[in-house]
Length: 250
Image (cartoon, rainbow, N blue to C red):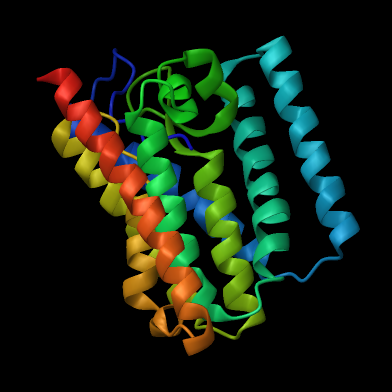
């Protein structure tokens, strides 16, 4: 999954911190709100898959043709939101119990951390490739400059689509769920802007969802053992990756 990126294109006439805040606010607010609105519609699976295929084809077209940055960024944003809604929402609406969000959040966040921090991870490679970011992350104009900057990755949107799907199926507080996703996005953006380097957005989003939705933490007794082991294994892999990354840098 693509992390939130803190580095903005050069040439902005607005102070770096303010420009970063505006980009993260706009880059997170627009796709998350769009995803929340789309996820509230219970569309047939065939339509969702068709929209996902259309979004994928649009991304391929942008990657091949590379038109002007503003048109390209709008096309990418709309396509990624469509993919997040179609794929994530379809999965979320098939989750049997709201508490399944607990292992889903832990495993997804751990996988995102490992993928970002590991030199062999796909998110690590994507974050270092401007061409990959151009079609796998949402974009927002940098204020005061003729440029755009990446904000959220396709994995973040698919995960939030899953969360919205679960919220819709199991009657979780929908407005609160949308707010928690926005809060997690803002938290990741603030950390990235303060530290000056890329951080993964999904762990912050998952943390806010788990803290703000008590139903997501109420595992049924019959499922606790399986969920516990899946979370232990996922966290162990993430911690091993962090330790390896620390040792390689020291």
